[in-house]
Length: 448
Image 1 (cartoon, one colour):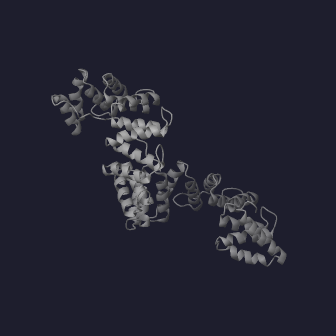
Image 2 (cartoon, rainbow, N blue to C red):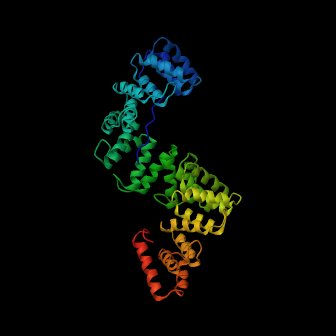
Image 3 (spheres, rainbow, N blue to C red):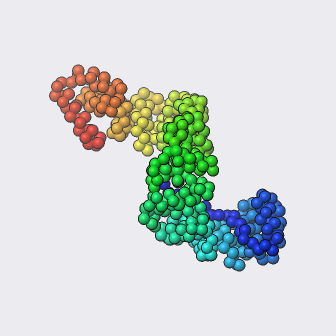
């Protein structure tokens, strides 16, 4: 996977101040004590007298709303005063304001300009930010080699975001030769210093056995560290490992806790997964209303399997009032995105007149769409349509063909239906039905 985008640092407090700068030191201590009002009071007079570090820090306080009401315009004004004196911290911070459009019109080219000025002063965070702009082609033409150059400069100074990003470049072979071992080396440096994204990436390397020997226990250990810092992908992966007993003892309850935590942070896979768990009662008390809530959240993000599950919930009245019309709506949305089970169910709704008028021709259309995707339920249903002459001309040969195909995929009733219809066919017709089934399968359902 691609590494996470390195977010620009909005607050980068310089601690290398003169021992005689007592007021500045007092401001730093107040900030560390989270006494932001006092920090502002200490830095304010210094900033007014032209102290560049105090100006930068005061700008950061206004940007973050610490000790003062958040005010991007005032933050910009203080940063500009500091950059006039060449302050690297302020250059980096001003770059982030332009990149994010805080207090100024968003302008990635100007952001690059300020990041570059700061990076050339060996500012590690700015080097990482500039590398990111090159990696993703923001404000500059995408250039992986330049991205690697700036990430490496930051990484060699110990910047953990730079180290993690450099690891990603080696993992993907962007700007450097693909080298999973080198990627692991950089991920590990950052992960051991507490970088959550690097911890997740390192866990993934152990899980996949890329650059290191595959080790589920090590993967789970790194995922847990990243999960504890709120990385939703790590929370989901850790939940998956508990659900499957990979690197940890299998524990469905613990799995559900981690997956739901990831779901609450908008992780789409986690939302669908926790909805399924509530629907089935796996690791949680079965709760159809909770299942509906999570399926709906996933569907709101365009998750196609969630469309199908919402259709089933409305069809069966699980956690909601049964509503066939709404079920049809959700099945149709999923069917139009080529979800084979939804296509089969939509065919069944038209066949039975649930939520829509009975229409066997439309039912046949949707059954055929799903059947040619290899869905055995739809294949069996399509066989029944041919066997009954509903929506298509009565055709026992085609019925036998589709039931044979469904039976070959393990459909429970298709085999019996095929044997029953066989009694209505002549020997040449049976041979034809078998030939058609072989032809359909051999063509990958292109010639059925």
